[in-house]
Image (cartoon, rainbow, N blue to C red; front, top):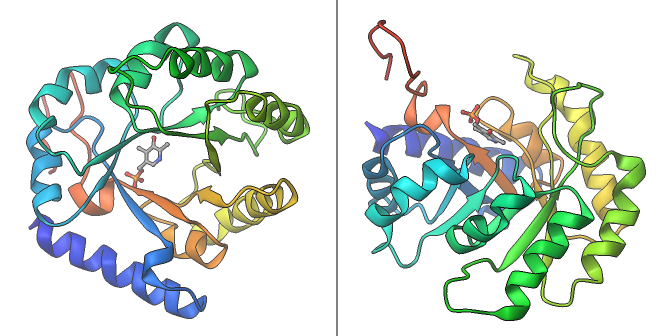
Length: 234
Ligand SMILES: *Cc1c(COP(=O)(O)O)cnc(C)c1O
């Protein structure tokens, strides 16, 4: 079941990459496992997936023990991070994709400077807010250059990419201008990584240069909803 879904996603990635004249290797598939039990991570790992995305520090704290033996797995934090959760986040995740303030970057750098053995963090990406939506986290494009300067001044942080989430739409083409804008910001600032594209718009993202796509629903089905009396759809 997961195997079939993974096959389908892999075929979509391969087709989009071929259309864009890119290799399959140039795109990292991040399996988004938020709200799912740790055995879902294990099942995907056994099928060859190595990169996983989680949105909540606390939620992944409760899963981490169950997947600690998957030594080749890389965990990406793709949800908003509050500065006061910097330490647990840096202990749990290889990549934090949602750095959006100098303060957060400086906190993470401080933990890396001390370099105790508990710290797992290796790379950060900056979350950019490209739509005017009030609720979205991320740095405004106008403030991005100053944030990049601040992060580059953090000697122990490796800045590898920009990340964004366009406003939700069912039409994949609606995401294209946002992906183009993120690619342009990355190019202008000499940043190689682009984390963009989800289940419904991953092809458009790959066409526009995504190096990391974050895919949940297309792999695992609808996420379990807490506090519901309805049967789950998964
Ligand atoms: C949940 C989530 C995803 C995965 O979305 P799907 O539509 O289920 O593929 C990707 N990125 C972020 C930031 C998310 O929160």
